[in-house]
Amino acid sequence: VSTQSTWDIRKYKMSDQYNGAALVGMCGKECVALACDTRLGVQLRTIDTNFNKVFKVNDRTMIGLTGLATDIQTVSAKLHKEEKVYRLEEGETLTASMFANFVSHFLYKQRFAPYIVTPIVAGLDYDSITKEWKPVMAGYDLIGCMDQNNTFAVGGTCSELLYGACESFYKEGMGPDEIFEVISQALLTSMDRDILSGWGANVYILTPTQLITKKLLTRVDQQLFQYSNLLSVKKKKKKKKK
Amino acid sequence: MGLKLDMENFGLTTFSRDGKLGQIDFALEAMSKGESSIGICAKNGVVLASEKKLSSILIDEESFHKVELLGVSKGVTFSGMTTDFQALLLNGRKEYHKYFSKFKTPITSRRMAENLGKVMQEATQSGGVRPFGVSLLVGGYDNDGAHLYQIDPSGAYFGWKATAIGKNMMNMKNFLEKRYTDSIELEDAIHLAILMLKENYEGEMNEVNIEIGIIGTDKKFRILTPAEIKDYLKEAEQCYVDSSIITNVDQLR
Image (tube, rainbow over all chains, first blue to last red; front, side, top):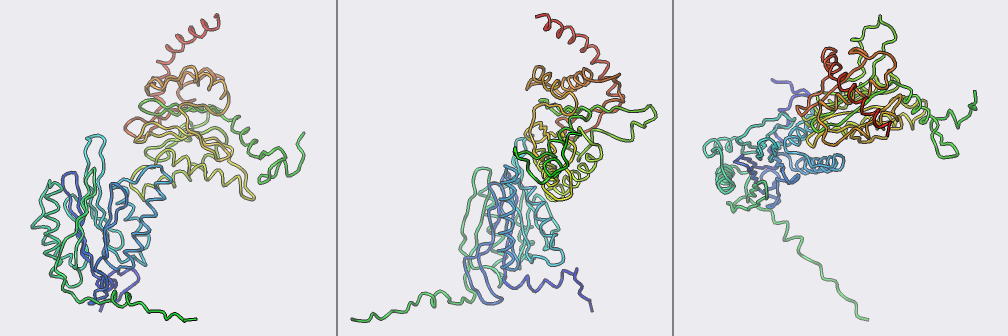
């Protein structure tokens, strides 16, 4: 019997599986890509089919978040605010590697009441010495342990499946077109086997000159709660005749 | 004494009738009576130099420094009260590392100056405290080149290409206005600083009486050892002889 103490992060496992998400990031040659699913659910019930989990931070960085949806919204809003405050104070935009380190610091500040999110920061750093754009890809756990590498990062309820798919499909030095194919395949194969994630996918590819957004058509066979129909019914007011 | 014991002269947080804060002006006085310090921005670095008069031969000159490190990539020197400088140094070092632990990159010079300015300003708008009796010179080499900032007791910070603070600062600034060029190299800047210190030094100037700190394109601030300063002094003696001839010619005209 394990006694769960305040510093034991295993007690957040159930909250991680509450809303469902899938997120994968990959590094290419002078480009990075982040792909997420667009389902928002409450355990087995799908609520929203257009819930985006990847956010643009500035021209050279984007962040994707999985985990508890309320924390996804809060953390993304807070990080956006921090980026803006930095830009105002400093007069320059945050570089990708600085933002990546900042996210780690931000999450650890809440060590004993963590945000139940698994972020992935993807960006491009300009190296003025070699005149190249270096990809920055960092994955974290909920308390900010940074895992920075030059290959890929995964997050979400189907992260185990994504690890397998990425290991098989990933290769070094991909261009923007190739990285789109690879990341889409990796996400689709993993997402389709997971009930909590799916229902559409967004792929974001960041190059030095543009941010390419693409929507993927996926299988849409989870149970859908028809909220929208109820809201569209309007009551007709009877006009009194004088 | 000549000063009335009233709020006008001794109340820090009260303005006087002509819109001045008396204590801050007096703090500036304290600063301008302190030992001179010079900062020069070169094309490829920054030089911070300061007088370090030893009141007795028994003083251990290695035990205290006038030019100090704020972090790996920032240096600071001062004119005015030594103890106030120590307090600000502690604060500045903490800020440096706070920023570094967040972003894993060294803080920019302007931001460092802003932080120090904030601390100094707080001491001009609180109860029961007095302003810091120092002016600081913060130098660093960032991504966009060399930077030098002066922070006054009021908390205001100014970016300079080259400046001097403390005793004889007007003379030194005039000298700099004539001698400073935007394309000066680091080595020449060091010579210029030594020249300026020598001109205004009371007594004999040697390698333990002054302190010089430099930062180059490697972005690492370091304080020169007495041996290195001795070499520069030897070279400078030649320059001094040459330059004194030139100034004499100007005077003739």
